[in-house]
Length: 202
Image (cartoon, rainbow, N blue to C red; front, top):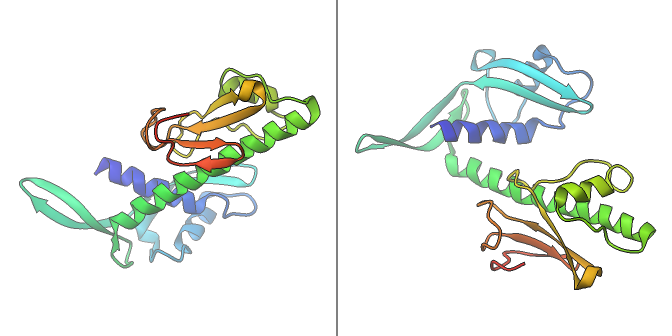
């Protein structure tokens, strides 16, 4: 149950980040939550605990009334569907697939940002950055060649930067969902294209 609620909160966070203009407070956060088109919620269904904002990004921490439908077999409850507020029942698989797709797309986005920064550097310096890991790579690239710190993939695992072809090429690797390199779910960006899965090879 705990893992499921974390999944739900992450899903809501995906929807909410970047949706707001101006200064966010609890009252405005409540209004924005109640306007979400995919849910049918009333004020009694939501309690906003905290709002934090940095620039154009806002994070809302809220308690939301949910109902779970599932199977109770051999003393264990397995949720199958979820209802938020007075909305329709939605298969839990929908939330899981949405989160999976988001993490995959976020990984590709971060890798492409890194690649752009690396190319900006090489255009000026004439070679790719000589860095032993992603942290030292960011020390070289930020802020002159890339405007934000990008070190992790969609699963919040550190990316790996590897020089190839005696420094004439590079790879950026995500360890994927399992967080372990050299396994089949690695995502590899090599020669300016994605290779996924990597088949366990860099």
